[in-house]
Amino acid sequence: MTARRRLLFACALAAGLLYVEAGALGALSAPDEVRVAGIGVEMVARGAWAIPTLGGEPFLEKPPLGFLSVGFATRLFGRTALAARLPSMLWGLVAALSLAALARRVYGRLSAGLGAGALLLLSPSVLKYSHRCLVDGSLLGAVTLSALCLWRFVDTPSRRGRWALAAVGACALAFFAKGAVGLVFPSLFLVGLLAVRRDAKLLRSPWFWLSPGAVIALVGLWLAGVAAEGGEAALKTVVVDNHLRRFAPAAGYAGGHERPWHYYLGKLPVVLLPSLVLLPAALAWHRRQGRTRQPLGPCLAWLGGGAVLLSLAGTKRQVYLLPLVPPAALLAGGWVAGLIGRPLTRLEDWTLRALGWAALAGALVGPGVLLGRGAPLRCALVCGWAAGAAVALFAFLALRRGRVEGFLLRVLLALLLTLLGCYPSYAAMQDRRHDLSAFFRGVAVRVPPRVPILLWEPSEATRGALRFYADRSGRTIARLAEAREATGARALVVVERVRRGRPVRVAAAEALGARVLLRARSEREAALLVAWGAWAGARGSSPARRSP
Image 1 (cartoon, rainbow, N blue to C red):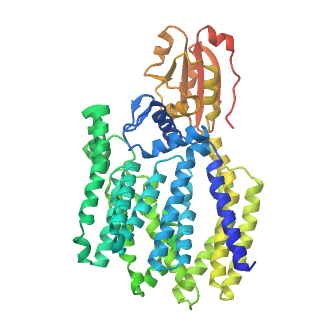
Image 2 (image 1 turned 90 degrees about the vertical axis):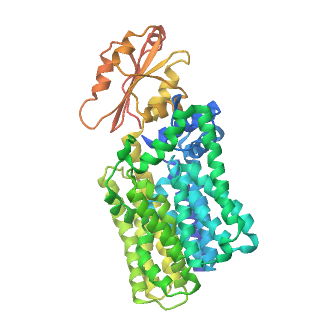
């Protein structure tokens, strides 16, 4: 086996281990993961297809695709963190494979596809959010698949009808993943592609005009289902509150996450790593090319236009930038493939050295950052630090000898080994901060199905965790006195976010004089289960415990 094949095998093995490890380690985190998991489980249990629900109440912030994916995955494989994250992991693979196929088609090289796919999966944001139980993973996969189908639709006149149907399906999936924003990024990509191609024959194709109508028809069918199931109020919530007012919250949107227009200026560079390091040299290389200049227009329209539109929107979160990673990875992957077998320019040489230093710094500094934030010291962390640093140093030796391909493979392996070593400590740190899964599983054991559960002003995360771990839903109460004044056997669940000091709401619930069945505490949350009725006394109380 040649050295090149050994490096490729080592990279593939490390990437596979990292991809599984990142999804399997750690419990579902609050508030987002447990909320999405609870909605998915409840939708499948109720047999609802149009309107997501949480605790029996409509949850209309997003369309149902991501929730249903989680619900079916947990029904098939059990209610574990890995099963709940499996749809996002699969959508991440769809994004990587779609981008690899697109790069292979655009640049005519398999190495371009491998480079683009690897850069996408190695992006810290993609690695993080494609291994979380969130709907953003499905958005990333569907948007990238849409870009591939649209490129083939424009680039393959002999099979235009087939690719038009594929593009309709992919764009519809992008909408059902997260709403109208899922159609924005493919539209920007198509506009940039049309501006570069300037093909009048394409505009005369009936498929060009029928395809948008087909997407609108599919969206209309879902909206009709929302109206039939939830009435005019549900339809207004979807169209007005969760689309128009998300873009302009001043009109009355109360969903949170309101940020100033410049919020993404500091977030976007972080999200685009490591492709951002390669992007200046990649842009310069594309400008010097002939046919390979074609992806420059659509990718810049996707990346630049998407960043501007997201900045103009009133609601902002870092995860919303996830669909902007593929165009940067595509351009960088094409440039990486073009490096092999030719002399380097000064900018390209500097860029490769910067990439090598970034890999070495990540191997040396990354574990220290985790330890400084409270992550436990694990053997894997030390091994990842040592192996990543050693491979990064060997990468510089390959670059000095002019072996660009060997340098790139060693840098990739160094990054993979560093991440592989750091992730167990990172997952343990997150569990220590947020994990209350043992508490909610205890609720399922200690509270019989016939006994109603009361929730004192619960968050969406509390209702989602109760549904996912205990397969129960509770009745919300606004005042603690309602729990005391109620009659019959009943249980009360109180979950409180705590920064410092003693949890006030938990202490107030303990003062009711009811039987304490279960306590739990993480670094940031405290939880309590109390009960009234003969069954509570018979089962006895549970000593204080800390979630692992």
